[in-house]
Amino acid sequence: MSYGKFAYVYDELMQDMPYAKWKRFAQEAWDKFGRPREVVELGCGTGTLTALLAQEGYAVTGIDLSEDMLAVARAKAEERPPLQGLLRGGELRFVQQDMTEWAAPEPVDSVISFCDCLNYLTEPEQIEDTFRATYAGLKPGGTFLFDVHHPDTLRRYEAEQPFVYDEDGISYIWTCGLDEERTEIEHHLRIFVRRGEDAQTAARSEAAYDRFDEVHIERAYDPDWLKAALLRAGFSRAEVYADFEWQAPEEGSERLFYVAVR
Image (cartoon, rainbow, N blue to C red; front, side, top):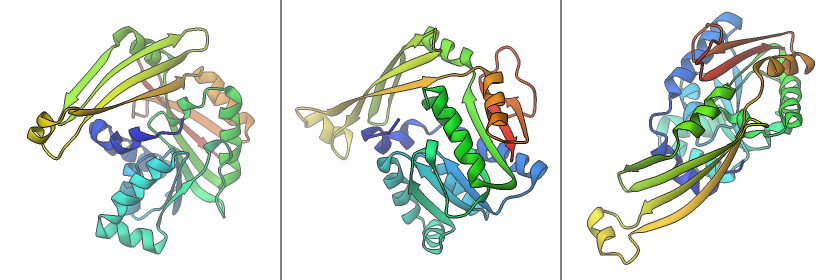
Protein backbone atom coordinates (compact mmCIF):
# COMPACT_ATOMS: atom_id res chain seq x y z
CA MET A 1 0.00 0.00 0.00
CA SER A 2 1.44 3.35 -1.07
CA TYR A 3 -0.29 6.28 0.61
CA GLY A 4 -1.11 9.35 -1.50
CA LYS A 5 -3.12 12.35 -0.28
CA PHE A 6 -3.83 10.49 2.95
CA ALA A 7 -0.20 11.05 3.95
CA TYR A 8 -0.85 14.77 4.44
CA VAL A 9 -3.72 14.25 6.89
CA TYR A 10 -2.38 11.07 8.49
CA ASP A 11 -0.94 12.68 11.63
CA GLU A 12 -4.10 14.69 12.27
CA LEU A 13 -6.29 11.61 11.99
CA MET A 14 -3.92 9.38 13.97
CA GLN A 15 -3.27 11.61 16.96
CA ASP A 16 -4.23 8.83 19.37
CA MET A 17 -1.86 6.20 17.97
CA PRO A 18 0.10 4.55 20.82
CA TYR A 19 3.61 5.54 19.71
CA ALA A 20 4.83 5.66 23.32
CA LYS A 21 3.71 2.06 23.83
CA TRP A 22 5.49 0.89 20.67
CA LYS A 23 8.65 2.65 21.81
CA ARG A 24 8.37 1.09 25.26
CA PHE A 25 7.86 -2.41 23.86
CA ALA A 26 10.90 -2.03 21.59
CA GLN A 27 13.10 -0.79 24.41
CA GLU A 28 11.95 -3.58 26.71
CA ALA A 29 12.80 -6.11 23.99
CA TRP A 30 16.21 -4.52 23.55
CA ASP A 31 16.77 -4.70 27.32
CA LYS A 32 16.22 -8.45 27.01
CA PHE A 33 18.16 -9.11 23.81
CA GLY A 34 20.77 -6.34 23.63
CA ARG A 35 20.55 -2.59 23.06
CA PRO A 36 21.07 -1.75 19.38
CA ARG A 37 23.03 1.10 17.92
CA GLU A 38 21.57 1.02 14.39
CA VAL A 39 17.85 0.44 13.84
CA VAL A 40 15.77 0.16 10.68
CA GLU A 41 12.05 0.87 10.82
CA LEU A 42 10.02 -0.75 8.04
CA GLY A 43 6.85 1.14 7.14
CA CYS A 44 7.91 4.26 9.04
CA GLY A 45 5.08 6.37 7.61
CA THR A 46 5.33 10.01 8.69
CA GLY A 47 8.28 9.21 10.95
CA THR A 48 6.79 9.81 14.38
CA LEU A 49 8.25 6.69 16.01
CA THR A 50 11.43 7.01 13.94
CA ALA A 51 12.03 10.46 15.41
CA LEU A 52 11.22 9.35 18.97
CA LEU A 53 13.85 6.62 18.77
CA ALA A 54 16.41 8.92 17.17
CA GLN A 55 15.97 11.32 20.07
CA GLU A 56 16.75 8.41 22.44
CA GLY A 57 20.19 8.04 20.86
CA TYR A 58 19.58 5.30 18.28
CA ALA A 59 20.75 5.74 14.69
CA VAL A 60 17.47 5.11 12.87
CA THR A 61 16.66 4.65 9.19
CA GLY A 62 12.98 4.89 8.34
CA ILE A 63 11.96 2.96 5.24
CA ASP A 64 8.61 3.38 3.50
CA LEU A 65 7.14 2.70 0.07
CA SER A 66 5.28 6.02 -0.04
CA GLU A 67 7.32 9.05 -1.06
CA ASP A 68 4.44 11.23 0.19
CA MET A 69 4.74 9.75 3.68
CA LEU A 70 8.49 10.23 3.61
CA ALA A 71 8.10 13.83 2.44
CA VAL A 72 5.94 14.52 5.50
CA ALA A 73 8.46 12.73 7.75
CA ARG A 74 11.38 14.79 6.43
CA ALA A 75 9.43 18.04 6.69
CA LYS A 76 8.51 17.31 10.31
CA ALA A 77 12.14 16.59 11.17
CA GLU A 78 13.38 19.72 9.40
CA GLU A 79 10.99 21.85 11.46
CA ARG A 80 12.52 20.75 14.78
CA PRO A 81 16.14 21.82 15.39
CA PRO A 82 17.18 18.70 17.38
CA LEU A 83 15.86 16.39 14.65
CA GLN A 84 17.26 18.65 11.94
CA GLY A 85 20.69 18.12 13.43
CA LEU A 86 20.19 14.35 13.47
CA LEU A 87 19.13 14.45 9.82
CA ARG A 88 22.19 16.43 8.84
CA GLY A 89 24.43 14.13 10.85
CA GLY A 90 22.99 10.94 9.37
CA GLU A 91 21.64 9.63 12.69
CA LEU A 92 18.11 9.96 11.28
CA ARG A 93 17.46 8.92 7.68
CA PHE A 94 14.42 8.32 5.51
CA VAL A 95 14.65 6.03 2.49
CA GLN A 96 12.07 4.95 -0.07
CA GLN A 97 12.13 1.17 -0.47
CA ASP A 98 9.77 -1.78 -0.71
CA MET A 99 9.93 -3.74 2.56
CA THR A 100 9.79 -7.04 0.65
CA GLU A 101 13.23 -6.34 -0.81
CA TRP A 102 14.73 -3.68 1.42
CA ALA A 103 18.46 -3.50 1.96
CA ALA A 104 20.84 -1.35 3.98
CA PRO A 105 24.47 -0.57 3.12
CA GLU A 106 25.57 -2.64 6.13
CA PRO A 107 23.75 -5.08 8.46
CA VAL A 108 22.02 -3.40 11.41
CA ASP A 109 21.39 -4.37 15.02
CA SER A 110 17.59 -4.34 15.00
CA VAL A 111 14.64 -3.99 12.63
CA ILE A 112 11.18 -2.91 13.75
CA SER A 113 7.83 -2.68 11.98
CA PHE A 114 4.85 -1.58 14.04
CA CYS A 115 1.36 -0.21 13.40
CA ASP A 116 0.32 -3.42 11.57
CA CYS A 117 2.45 -2.57 8.53
CA LEU A 118 2.90 -6.23 7.63
CA ASN A 119 -0.86 -6.68 7.37
CA TYR A 120 -0.64 -4.59 4.18
CA LEU A 121 1.28 -7.45 2.58
CA THR A 122 -1.66 -9.40 1.20
CA GLU A 123 0.14 -12.47 -0.16
CA PRO A 124 2.11 -15.01 1.91
CA GLU A 125 5.02 -14.73 -0.53
CA GLN A 126 5.37 -11.02 0.34
CA ILE A 127 5.57 -11.85 4.03
CA GLU A 128 8.23 -14.48 3.42
CA ASP A 129 10.21 -12.14 1.16
CA THR A 130 10.14 -9.49 3.90
CA PHE A 131 11.31 -11.99 6.50
CA ARG A 132 14.19 -13.13 4.26
CA ALA A 133 15.21 -9.54 3.45
CA THR A 134 15.15 -8.69 7.15
CA TYR A 135 17.18 -11.73 8.12
CA ALA A 136 19.78 -10.71 5.51
CA GLY A 137 19.80 -7.14 6.79
CA LEU A 138 20.50 -8.02 10.42
CA LYS A 139 23.76 -8.70 12.20
CA PRO A 140 24.09 -12.09 13.95
CA GLY A 141 22.08 -11.88 17.16
CA GLY A 142 20.07 -8.95 15.82
CA THR A 143 16.37 -8.62 16.56
CA PHE A 144 13.27 -8.23 14.40
CA LEU A 145 10.27 -6.75 16.24
CA PHE A 146 6.87 -6.29 14.63
CA ASP A 147 3.18 -6.32 15.32
CA VAL A 148 0.18 -7.46 13.28
CA HIS A 149 -3.57 -7.52 13.72
CA HIS A 150 -4.98 -10.73 15.14
CA PRO A 151 -7.38 -12.27 12.56
CA ASP A 152 -10.28 -11.64 14.95
CA THR A 153 -9.48 -7.92 14.94
CA LEU A 154 -10.39 -7.72 11.27
CA ARG A 155 -13.64 -9.51 12.02
CA ARG A 156 -14.40 -6.94 14.73
CA TYR A 157 -13.73 -4.11 12.29
CA GLU A 158 -16.37 -5.44 9.92
CA ALA A 159 -18.85 -6.06 12.72
CA GLU A 160 -18.41 -2.56 14.20
CA GLN A 161 -18.28 -0.48 11.01
CA PRO A 162 -19.07 2.14 9.80
CA PHE A 163 -16.75 4.54 11.63
CA VAL A 164 -17.21 8.31 11.51
CA TYR A 165 -14.81 11.09 12.50
CA ASP A 166 -15.50 14.85 12.52
CA GLU A 167 -13.01 17.11 14.24
CA ASP A 168 -11.07 20.34 13.56
CA GLY A 169 -11.79 20.76 9.88
CA ILE A 170 -11.34 17.17 8.85
CA SER A 171 -13.92 14.39 8.65
CA TYR A 172 -14.17 10.87 7.31
CA ILE A 173 -16.61 8.05 6.75
CA TRP A 174 -14.91 4.66 7.00
CA THR A 175 -16.58 1.46 5.87
CA CYS A 176 -15.08 -1.97 5.32
CA GLY A 177 -15.85 -5.43 4.03
CA LEU A 178 -14.20 -8.71 4.99
CA ASP A 179 -13.28 -11.62 2.74
CA GLU A 180 -13.52 -14.35 5.36
CA GLU A 181 -11.83 -16.99 3.21
CA ARG A 182 -8.67 -14.89 2.89
CA THR A 183 -9.10 -13.09 6.23
CA GLU A 184 -8.66 -9.93 4.17
CA ILE A 185 -10.41 -6.64 4.77
CA GLU A 186 -10.94 -3.75 2.36
CA HIS A 187 -11.18 -0.35 4.05
CA HIS A 188 -12.96 2.45 2.17
CA LEU A 189 -12.31 5.94 3.49
CA ARG A 190 -14.08 9.03 2.20
CA ILE A 191 -12.16 11.97 3.64
CA PHE A 192 -13.25 15.62 3.74
CA VAL A 193 -10.72 18.37 4.47
CA ARG A 194 -11.94 21.90 5.16
CA ARG A 195 -10.78 24.58 2.77
CA GLY A 196 -9.58 27.97 3.98
CA GLU A 197 -7.53 29.06 6.94
CA ASP A 198 -10.44 29.13 9.36
CA ALA A 199 -14.04 28.03 9.69
CA GLN A 200 -15.46 31.41 8.60
CA THR A 201 -13.42 31.40 5.40
CA ALA A 202 -14.53 27.85 4.69
CA ALA A 203 -18.19 28.70 5.33
CA ARG A 204 -18.09 31.37 2.61
CA SER A 205 -16.55 29.00 0.08
CA GLU A 206 -18.79 27.42 -2.56
CA ALA A 207 -17.03 24.11 -1.85
CA ALA A 208 -16.18 24.21 1.85
CA TYR A 209 -14.42 20.84 1.76
CA ASP A 210 -12.08 18.97 -0.54
CA ARG A 211 -13.01 15.30 -0.78
CA PHE A 212 -10.80 12.37 -1.63
CA ASP A 213 -11.22 8.62 -1.34
CA GLU A 214 -8.73 6.00 -0.18
CA VAL A 215 -8.92 2.21 -0.34
CA HIS A 216 -6.65 0.23 1.99
CA ILE A 217 -6.45 -3.56 2.03
CA GLU A 218 -5.09 -5.59 4.93
CA ARG A 219 -4.78 -9.31 5.46
CA ALA A 220 -4.34 -11.19 8.72
CA TYR A 221 -2.34 -14.40 8.95
CA ASP A 222 -2.47 -17.41 11.21
CA PRO A 223 -0.22 -16.62 14.20
CA ASP A 224 1.51 -20.00 14.07
CA TRP A 225 2.14 -19.66 10.34
CA LEU A 226 3.92 -16.34 10.91
CA LYS A 227 6.14 -17.90 13.57
CA ALA A 228 6.99 -20.83 11.30
CA ALA A 229 7.75 -18.46 8.43
CA LEU A 230 10.25 -16.58 10.60
CA LEU A 231 12.04 -19.82 11.40
CA ARG A 232 12.04 -20.82 7.71
CA ALA A 233 13.68 -17.49 6.91
CA GLY A 234 16.56 -18.47 9.18
CA PHE A 235 15.78 -16.82 12.52
CA SER A 236 17.04 -18.87 15.44
CA ARG A 237 14.06 -18.09 17.66
CA ALA A 238 10.66 -16.47 17.31
CA GLU A 239 8.23 -15.61 20.09
CA VAL A 240 4.77 -14.06 20.03
CA TYR A 241 3.12 -11.82 22.63
CA ALA A 242 -0.06 -9.76 22.76
CA ASP A 243 -1.18 -6.17 23.12
CA PHE A 244 2.08 -4.46 24.12
CA GLU A 245 2.62 -6.85 27.02
CA TRP A 246 4.97 -9.78 27.56
CA GLN A 247 2.10 -12.24 27.76
CA ALA A 248 0.86 -15.03 25.53
CA PRO A 249 -2.01 -14.23 23.15
CA GLU A 250 -5.45 -15.21 24.37
CA GLU A 251 -9.05 -14.89 23.28
CA GLY A 252 -9.76 -11.21 22.68
CA SER A 253 -6.15 -10.22 21.90
CA GLU A 254 -6.06 -7.42 19.31
CA ARG A 255 -2.40 -7.04 18.34
CA LEU A 256 0.20 -9.78 18.15
CA PHE A 257 3.82 -8.80 18.80
CA TYR A 258 6.63 -10.92 17.39
CA VAL A 259 10.22 -10.96 18.60
CA ALA A 260 12.63 -12.85 16.34
CA VAL A 261 16.38 -13.25 16.80
CA ARG A 262 18.81 -13.82 13.94
